[in-house]
Image (cartoon, rainbow, N blue to C red; front, side, top):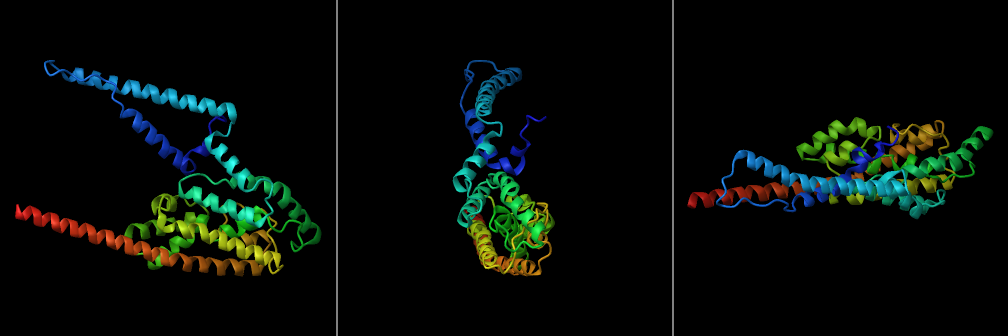
Length: 318
């Protein structure tokens, strides 16, 4: 059981599932069987046997191909293809600079961009490392001085990405759902947003990524990238200015993003107020994009109705 890479299942491996499906489909499109001659008497058993022959060769190719790919990757790493992707991107964007504001912002942008394509976040792995080093030093400082003001590493993945980057949910998903409930007119999106509020509040954004969807949806790509960066920039400025303290306590990932800073600072009211203000600003920022989606849906419905009307007229003329 330990050799099974469960992290690659579910939404984390969605993009790889798309690619795998395309490759398998292309392989099965290759003709492998002989056609029956026009003079040959063909029975139902002959057709079933011929079909099994057509399925055997592409199936064998698929098994050999992906077993070979999996074995080759196992010689390089035990983390699988997503592990290679995460480690590579995290190294390029962060490296050891997990206390640099712009490195964290760049990593967040790339993380959300990959999430837009259905790929896993490259921040998850280094975030654990960052907590055991920089955030661990911050925690010890707060215990010794009974405050997190003056902590040795005020800017970390935890103090920025966890606390401010996810105020409105992963990729701003919670803010988007509330904006859809406020101004959205598409019944399907409103139903998904209503049912997804509670899990998204706990940072489980799968229902929105696939149900709305946000994956491959260019309408919401820009706010998906901008909202977390804006929140983190505001947080970095306020922390550097010593207006609010950095979050030194590690909070369970299911804690609502708007409460991460309040709980992580041990109950700092100013941090909570900032989080609430940013959350409402994020909702306001998403509203124009939701309205743009409404206009696009209305245009598609109008075109479909016009097409059906023209088709009906042509049939009546005939």
